[in-house]
Length: 146
Image (cartoon, rainbow, N blue to C red; front, side, top):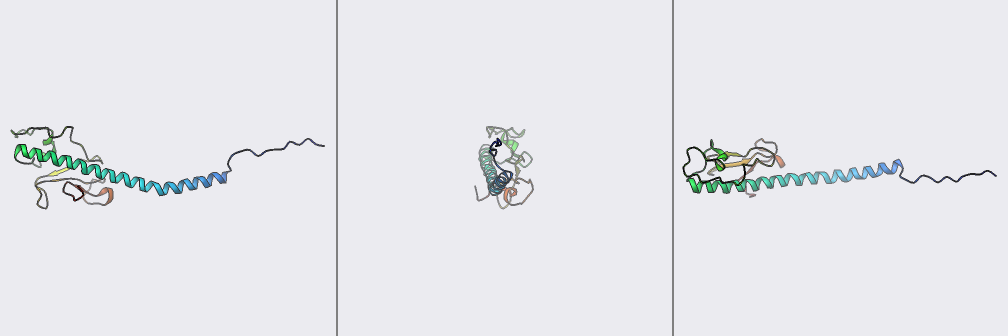
């Protein structure tokens, strides 16, 4: 009688099982990732609105001290640095340096503003271009979403 060893199959997963798991993980990622990145875009827009609100309050304080808003040429720098011709400046009106918008672009400031507003203060969104939708939409200090 021959001495046969009984072979036990190696423990582990087959290639087919691993492929099925990878497909399931891929399907889950394709479902979750767009929702996750959409939330990031919304949070950047909310951050822009919060920064615009802080800049709006700083501009209001500047106006109380000087009697007028900074000119377009002076821009938002007038909130952190005294303009040469401004005797009643009592700033700085921001506790930190002038921030860029959440996408790294400078906020746009213009005096006078549009639609009867004293000034215009806005971010052009992620793309840095006027108009757009989603993350690329413009965010203004005068938006109703404030």
